[in-house]
Length: 219
Ligand code: URA
Image 1 (cartoon, rainbow, N blue to C red):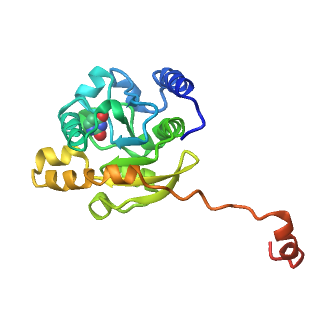
Image 2: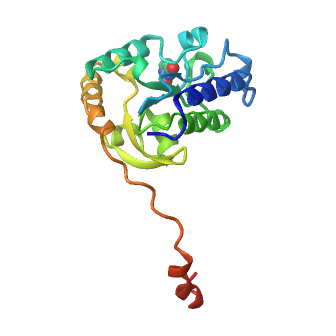
Image 3: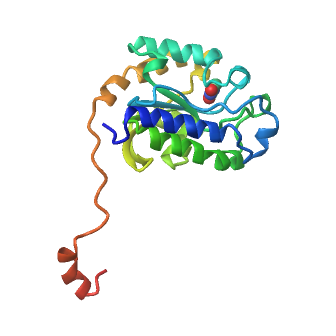
């Protein structure tokens, strides 16, 4: 379990949310009703990262409260979880006009807010919903269709976590057969949350071990 105490993590998140509420790092600040910061259980082992707020999220200031959010709630219920058990955030914290795709400069401006939330939450599993979150957090260009349902160990927020790409719930709103894929990917989450993740590989060698190599000019 994480080193940060329950109270201080929630407090730090709240304080960070207050700072981010005034963000003007990109042009989306001009059109938003409000910043939509992450929400849910700050001590959760499971964090979801979606794409960007839509109309309802922008109005209510909470991620995933519209149609895709209702489906997310249902998918969570199917595996015995509620929104109060998990933490949910987005790649972008402000609504793009007309719900268009996030632009590279918007992602770049906003990603620090996401990294900091991951650092504070210290989840064991980060489930990325859709292409934008998956590409950003995996650091790879491979799209969601190829990687969904395949967990990978990555370092996020200074810790090893299991990154688990899943289709965005909105995809199932328009493509009903996607719902079965989503359900079966969600069904793997409880097992992933119980998995041990290997600690990061040491990045240094002790002086004693290194010395002969240093003398040989190998380092
Ligand atoms: N879609 C997202 O990716 N995020 C939300 O908060 C709502 C819809």
